[in-house]
Image 1: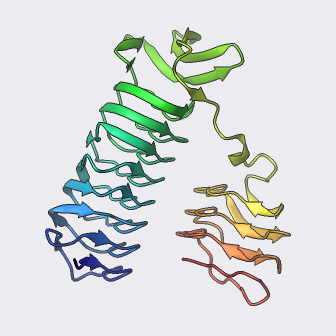
Image 2 (image 1 turned 60 degrees about the vertical axis):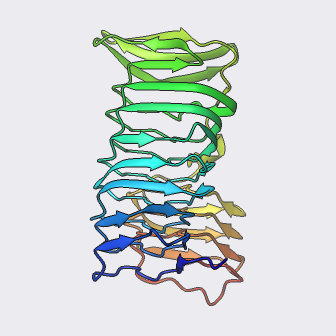
Length: 316
């Protein structure tokens, strides 16, 4: 059976296409429609790959998605999408899949999921979140969702990162496995979830004071990944990184750095300097052999010299 697909970069940055009919399409390849002028999608988006509709700023309405996996940043920064329905065959939602879809207020998830990736729904407009059975929920998956008020989770089989709902300042209710974990009044403000040696605590503020609620032991909260912190680096100006690997997303959205010198670096992770809009200058060490996907996407780089490096896998 022939697999009908929209190919890699087929409509990338196209200003001609407005309506896209996917009723006969089985796969959307990487960056297929990224940064295009698409406004409407007819049918279900099946097997959508990395960055397929990234930065489609005019794409609006309801998006139905099917297939095993929603690719990394597949719909990142599509601010006019209002509703997303993920069909029951979806098992994985990769990182940044719907990041900064600011007007996304309604989300329907399948009853069973294996992974909700890092920042998958970061800075969306979701108001009510209902999750059935899920394997894991990664770093900042729903962070900075300022309109989120209610979370209901049936079961987490593996783990949930403690900062999955960080900076959701209007969050009032959390229910897990039929039990109410948090029910804040209008004078109380959610401040996050803290994993300590003696247990896991919900923190909230009331009248300027911080109070806590201790959670049951059966909820598998984990501390955030400490290795993603950038404490060894200067937060602004020109920075030097002297280590073998720059972790994925390490300086993502850092607006204050203007230059980077990579000494002894062999590998630059995916999205490592993504959205560093003031980053103008990059000096690569001869040891660089791999540059991850979108490592410098939407940065301010004017020129980069790869001639003296050993890199073997660069993707824009």
